[in-house]
Length: 469
Image (cartoon, rainbow, N blue to C red; front, side):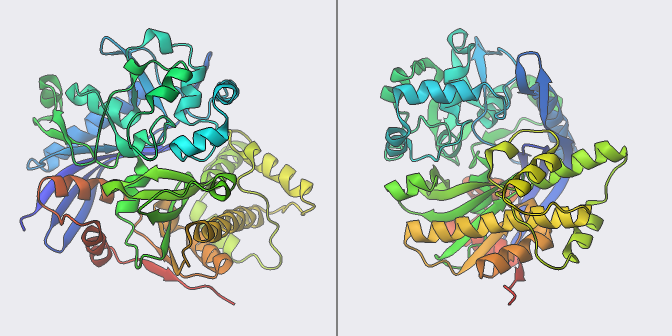
């Protein structure tokens, strides 16, 4: 098997990356080409993404990737879910809204007036999140002016190639994809006043979307095909989660912690609905049965508030090391509390929750950080137990992938609170999954998902954290 080189565009809610991946017999390598910030921008009409800047950074990153590796064979794009851009005559109407914008609150009320949540769960299998795309659509006053709506990775692919499609793993987060059929639920869309014209043709991962337009080829220095990957970043991350057995659970941990198991069929029971577990599509038609837990957002927002207070940067590694030394009882709060979802003064809001729970509020920042980490780990452990109960599986290990796998304190706390071994890594699971699906489509990687994961385990062995006590 010869070595295949591809470019991965991997976009998260706080940063984006362009990476070169090299895949061959017993070989899976990543090279970081560029990293750039990404985040919300407050405007007069609400919270948006600075999409123009994001797209320019992507093009610059692709140009640098081609300069470093002229033999790159394709491009794949993954990003966070639910957010979208509206097009009219091929032009973006405005910068996409950010999923944390408050307008979604009225969208929830409007949608549930037409289709109660119980009915929605039977149709789309999704947990209730107030920013799911169908709630955003319902609240979006620009909808009548658009002729197409494209989720973020699909929007970037359109700008690169002109192809208007929706890749299924991300489309499954909109609330408009039938959980049983994998097709658009046009009857539901009509009831909600969402025009059918907005919903593009659905494609699976591995589909060749087209070749970059001539002006893009001139900009990046090569005429490359764009291949659909698991365009929801969690779908790509789960591809590269080296699950050690069918009873393994996973946590894809970054801003959010996506906690769950991989299944062949959805779980649509009343208990799953009441536990707010979701059934999203994964690569190769698998079901990602999971629960969204607030992840490192709590820590990053707290650090951001302290840095603003101090007027200087904080060494997070040093703060985490100090937090690991904190002894005694650790006060816990509900990491999933809705009051923690918006930006701004996170330490004050956490302190409010601790007081309301009758807990003491740590004075020292190291102790406060320990409380944050242990509360996230406690929420992870609870979601793992629930995933096992609802899916009928006895979980035997947890694979924690993504940026959170670098947080040794979080990994150990998750092992301790779950009573299960935690296998941490790879850190760049999302980019690896993106790369593997591209390489497979090019005939340069194994076809079976288990074989792809075996390649990940062999080339990126995880660190193990065993439960203490």
